[in-house]
Amino acid sequence: MSQSDRTAAFHRLHEDGLLILPNAWDAGTARLMESLGARAAATTSAGVAWAHGWPDGDVLPVAQLVDTARAVAGAVDVPVSIDIEGGYADTPEGAAATARAVWDAGAVGINIEDGGGTPGALAEKIAAIRAACGPGLFINARCDVWLRGLGGLDEGLARAALYRKAGADGVFAPGLAEAESIRALAAGIHMPLNLMAVPGLPDAAALTALGVRRLSAGAAISAAALGLVRDRARDFLATGDAAPLGQGAMGWAELNGIMARP
Image 1 (cartoon, one colour):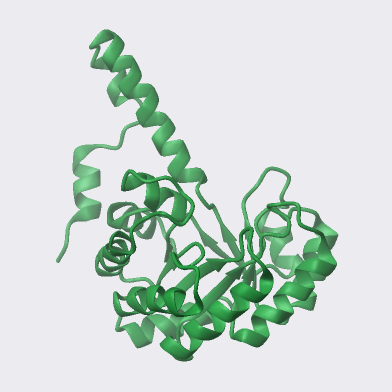
Image 2: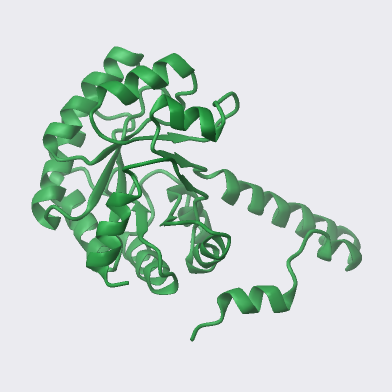
């Protein structure tokens, strides 16, 4: 698809039902997720940072973020959304430059978060990003009220209204898991609600009924993969035994087939 086709498709994916995103962290994992039926490719900022040897937390060099966006967009046919954390900048202009670079690299959506900052600061970044990228880019505003214990439903609704006015297309509320609060937030924000898979979250069918339109794995799959790498590498270093290395592994032919290009 062209980028304009991907943009339209990504917006449509938020209109009905539940868009489930098993977050990727590079071109290969994005291609793997697509082969399994993922309708869009979305990155996890933590997974991307770890894959490049950096910690999560707005310290990944922007050039490496943009390279990842370009590689993922070039590897899959589905729409691509890139997590840009806080924009890798303190200023609205800097965040807008990051978002524009990701957009130019082929992404059609971004996540940008308030984190430990003020809602007003994120609203200013969203407005600058919208001005820099135009109406097509899907801006998913991450509201960290629940993740950081900064308040409850009233605070979440107030932030969502501020972000929507600034130009956001959706709200991401990681850490929220209680059904009635989910229902109230989904009904009150007047744009698609994105949640993160956490223990105790209702299942996909229940989330759809509650009004949720997007469910993300976040860093969980990346962390699980790296946990397996740690365990296999640790045991191999200790014993040199090759037998356990293949346990649970995908076959060479299967992986090569997924990565093959026309």
